[in-house]
Every structure is written in structure tokens, then in C-alpha cells.
Image (cartoon, rainbow, N blue to C red):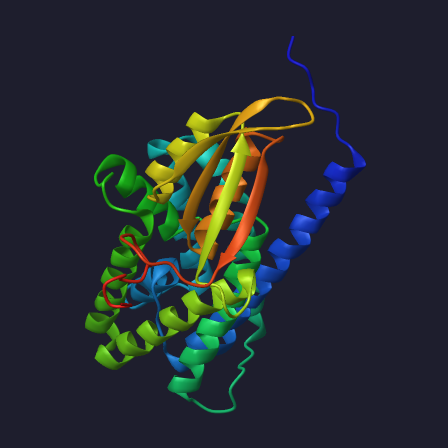
Length: 299
């Protein structure tokens, strides 16, 4: 018979803490959409951009269409990635559209009058804060991120997840240009840039662009496979010895973005509860690789 895991006070505390942060992130993002983006006629990348395009042809409210889009994405995730991946995103996928419905019903506007530039800036900041909270707690919206993961696993394993996600957002924004005009697409691009920068600031402050992860684990193969196949980063390994126990383990070393480091940390926690993960802020990196400086130009 399978053993039933005993629920501890720590588990309960973690659940309610995570729920608080998820609700906070959902509320901030919902406020950005209903009080800033929609009243100013803006669009964006991701699922929000897809729903904005659908709104131009389907006479339904934004939150209703968002629920339908997320339900469709969950089904796609279950088919191509399995129910294990669904469990990772189902909480946010169900809770966020529900919170969105509440905020949409309030009909609140942040700006006193239409100002598309201010709206684009504030959308990026608010979304960045919201997503930063999610990533910091190990959660994800599970929208185009999941689609990018499916494309990488099934079609383009040699291309990094971040590059595929960037391409998906680019297609959505270009499609917005066809529906809402070129200016709206350009404002959406501004929003995406501010969003990406804000996420990194929320997670690691205002200075860090690249971090170094050092992971000591007994499950080298599982962690390495995730880093190379899902994150698309290179990783090195060395053997280390704990002097107190004399136990030998593998230390994995990689350089990545702050957002990717949170994804790696979450995966490590799921496969090895006894792993040791160290995050080191890096001022600069020269060499070949995504996000690294060109050593020739620095000479």
C-alpha cells in the first residue's frame, strides 16, 4: 500500500503563504489589464495579446475569453507534456481569470484620461511586478511559456526556450499591428521591454543581469537534462567532497538569467530536497553564449 504523506504545520503555512502571493500577483496583473491596458486600447504579447485579438472578432468580455484560452492551453499541455506539467500551472490558470473577472466588473481606470504612452509604461511595470512575484515563489502563468516548451520539445530542441518565447511574442505583437494598427504594436513592444526588465529587478534587484548557480545534488542527470533541454543553457560539473561526512557529490555550475535561475531552483527542489543551491551575482561575463558580452569588443 502507498504511504500517505503526513501534512505538517510547515506545509500548511507554505500553502497559505503561496496562496497569498498568488492572489497578490493575480490582483496586480488584473489591475494592469482592466484599469490600464483595456481602457487605453492597448495590446501586448502572451495570452493577453491573443485574447485582445480574439476580442476583435468574438463579442465576449476579456475575462471570459481569457478563461477559455487558458482552458484550451491546459488541454494542450496535458496532451503534449502530461498532467505533471498541468499541475505546475493549474492554480494560477484557474485563479487568475477569476480575479480578472472581479476587477473587470469594477470598471476602474488608473489614468484620468487616455494616455497611451503612460499606459504602456505602467502596464509593463505592473506586469513585471506581478510576474516577478510569481517567479520568486516558483509559479508561472502557464500561457505562452507552456506553448514555447511544447514547441521546443517537439519541434525545435536546438533552440533555447527564451528564444522561442520571444518569437511567439513577436508573432502576437505583429498580429496586433494587423488588427489594431502599427502604433499599438509598437506600444506593446515598449510594454514587453519594461516588463522583462521589471521582472529581473523584482527577483534580483537593479544591478544583476546574469547569475551563477552552483548546485550540489545527488541527481546530476535529472538536473542536467532539465538545464540543457528545457532551459537551453550549458552546464559544467565537478566532483566535491563533504569533509564532515566524506560523501562525494556532483556540483553543477551554470550561468543564466535571474528568471531562468528561479526555474532551475524550482526543478531542483522537486527532484532533490537535499540539494544545495547557491546563487552568485555576476557583474559581467565575456564569452560565447546568450546574454554574454563579446570578449573581443572588451579588449
